[in-house]
Length: 406
Image 1: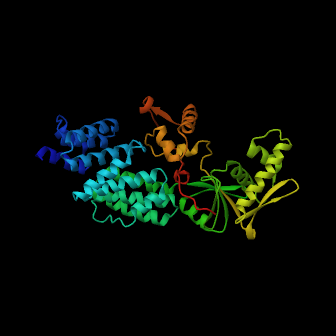
Image 2: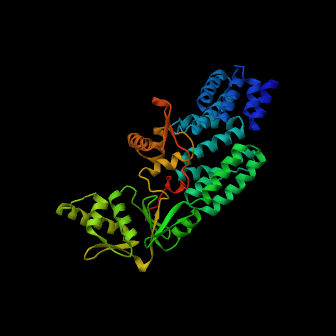
Image 3: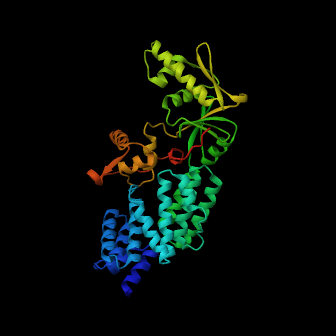
């Protein structure tokens, strides 16, 4: 490897993409193409970076498997930054195997971190935790150690284990300072701000106040019966009844929790659950059926009792009822939760992360665009959606997380 390539690589390691480009911008050999691709990625031109990395992988060819595998890892990182979550993960797994076989442990560890970051983005927390189990980040250089700790913190925040998240972010901050890469330090600081920003609104007896993630963690561990409007579930002392796939039942539970300890008239429940302005006997019959289903699902935590005018939520042993609501009432808040990271997302990536159909996501994006809350860049398959972070809007409680059965 010649001196210019070595100098460019060192510049990239130090977070100086312009210094790297000054040395290899006019070269088209395989190592120069790879370094130019990484430099363009650091500068934010991800489309150009992706093209350069593909050209570098082809230029290295089958006779240089390690170099080609490194290009695949770099391409995977660019795809992750572009939120191309459907990028073939099998190629990354194959590249990691090649790197491990040739004892390139640092790049293999980088590939491992990318796999876990993708799993975290799409909400597959159990798989992400299994990948992290037994992985020792201590031998990693500061930059990779920072990314590892950010992943650990991200999983902990999704799990609402805030003490673990703070510890991981503290280690990430120390590693980022040692790496002396401003972008990494900024990413750690951004994650820390999430812990200090209101994560939700707590509503009890019609009174509401903003709460931090630490307060949410304490609330969900308490004996308070919590109707979680962020993740569409009913929770108490670690027990969870998920209503994410039962929108009518959740609408009923939410209405009852907002009114507690008072009851909710049947007409209000009909309007809330079925959007029925003029209820007839069929609506009332369906309400009885749905209330019966809700009663069965909530039986371990609470009862739904009939009153002369409607129904009332009655938690076991006279516990208090609270509602955990979104910081900003928004019909498509789950889509905004992902876009609030400031990255550009394709509709297919959002569909994968949300577990919804691409058409459903596209309708939500069109509605948000009509309200000037999101904007599209590019056309056709290259179209991406993005929005600046919404002030006071913390995304953690809206992002996917596994719910245990209650």
